[in-house]
Image (cartoon, rainbow, N blue to C red; front, side, top):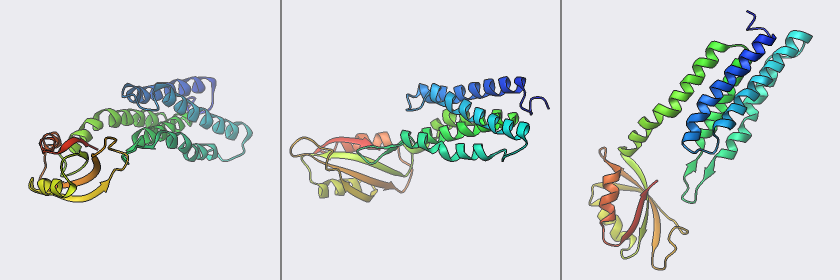
Length: 223
């Protein structure tokens, strides 16, 4: 029970554990060159832990205040960090959602350790690390063979109508077409973003190679 109360030993243990768990999660993000890396996750986890320790200390020593009020502010306030990692690219791709979710989860781990709920904090920290590192590969593999795909294509010697007919000949359905005005910089080129659907799973890389072979297609990329 000594580690559950706010004691000198508990303070050292909680801050140390929060640093380690934040570092484990942040290391995975840092190795993938994401906006928030090792130091950011460490600071989020330790900061959340300190806030929860302070809240518990005030409640324990002064016998006043809500023991979870400061923690609730962390849950909502961590959004400003997450929002700073989310960007929308020129081709309407959303980047940084996983990093933002990871920061929010790291804050939750810090809160759990800060209040003395070691079991949940340590287990959750390890689960978050596994989700970010292992599930990412599974998710990428699923995307590479999914029935729906979004592509960016630049056409130079073929008009959009002819290109769409050739795509339909590949037994693909065109679900959406958008003109990308800023995509093609060379005169005579036109850029588009298309959403394609297949009736069965298809290897996206092989499909992109097939589309590149169409006369008049100067560039194609999966989004």
